[in-house]
Image (cartoon, rainbow, N blue to C red; front, side):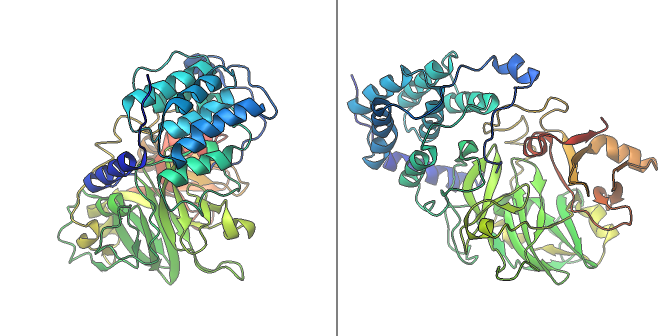
Length: 461
């Protein structure tokens, strides 16, 4: 016996519930699959055989009924159940990606379990008994299962019918759409920061108010801040504020900056958004409400061009067509007491920008590992180990294990890799060139750095 299940009212109730209670929340296009690492086989087993070529007409009809008709009509009934059975019997694991996409929005546990069982049949795994979407999606990512034909069109229909505002986001580009999922909040598509009114999103801060260090009496010395210095001007971005805003568009030392903070990745980064090629206006960065392997997806609100947040590269839209690559400034993760002692002239964002909230995702929600699917994780370090990441002059990404690097630097040891040198900076660590110039490093969790830089070198090796 089947029943008709409405999608939209339940979905938007869920969205509102999540965003009212807490603000929380690419990879390159998939190439020919490389042999899977041994640690992936050990954890996830061997992948199933994957057919090539187009889907049969019958299977195309089933995909339409299950994944397009269901969301456009906001129902899941007898036709969808029959179609899902035909899909599960096809033995084509590629379609499990679409099942995963729909599972992210499934409003009832029974429907979620039904979808998970179909995906498990396609993948040849045991049906998950909990965290259905997470288990299936981790398996798909780890095995690098190819997407089915016409994947983006169908995925776009699912996402844009269920959560509005992404119509300009879901377009073709240099992005692996398989790995894109919903972070649980709506897109921040405000042209300007007007956070006096609720946006039901993660609201970026534009040209934020700042104060002197002396006037920042609300900050405790042990509070974590992200410190940035540009042309001799210094500013602290308290983690308490960044966990609410996750994106700041600012000006420091005469330079424009876009500063994303991914709470899930433990990574605050700073990109210069000026001195760009002719014909490109300053990008105003916003949070899309989407994730790629537990990393926030940011975009430019003027052109709707999506950026790879970790790499600063435009991957869709007009800015991708112009091959825009933003340059990084270093971000130093440290405590407020040490930062202001090292830079007494520093300014700091004002408390009101936290909007009355005081989250600690690092030591709360995110303390036990990624809460969204990431697939396989390079086992050389624990998933949440802090690293200092930077790219060398030769283009080689390198990660320095922060805990060991900090001890070595305090002892006076030299830490170098190719042209990169690490130095202590106001209680944190940043990377400089051999001549002392900044190299645009930042701190992040190991799982995040290693998945966006899969060939990264690691110190100590």
